[in-house]
Amino acid sequence: MRFALLPIAAIACAACVPRAAVPERLAGSQWRFVTIDGDSPVDPGRSTLTFADDRMSASVGCNAIGGEWRVEQGRLIAGPLAGTRMFCEGDVWEQEQAISALLVAAPVIEWHGEDLVLRSSGHEAQLERLGADAS
Picture 1 (cartoon, rainbow, N blue to C red):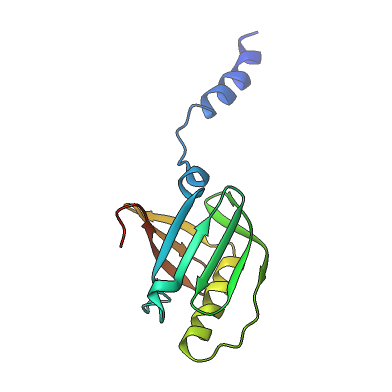
Picture 2: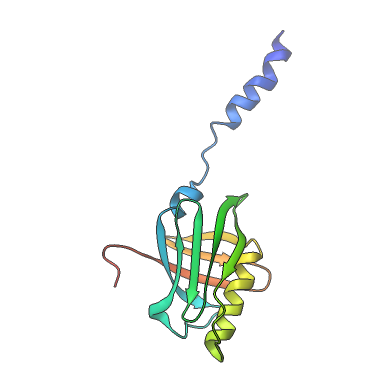
């Protein structure tokens, strides 16, 4: 009889382990890109990533992309993503391609204080939260 209770106790204890509330930290938030693959955004005023309850959108100054999102095992799962198709060129185009590739690659979510870092095998974005006191 004691052995039958062990699996139930193990399951109950597993539920007690504190976990980071990643989806709750992201839902309803807006972020500004600080760096994209180590470089400052070409258009910092228009380089944002926004999370609604179940939809997200991103732009670095030319096209916008968006779609559903969720968090699984510390990774941001975004998609399917749809976007506008305006003609863009130069650095803003390259940054747009980097952010698109990053978001579809299920990037790892890292927290550095209140700042957010999204990292995949090929790209990285550092972001800061936009809030009531952000400029």
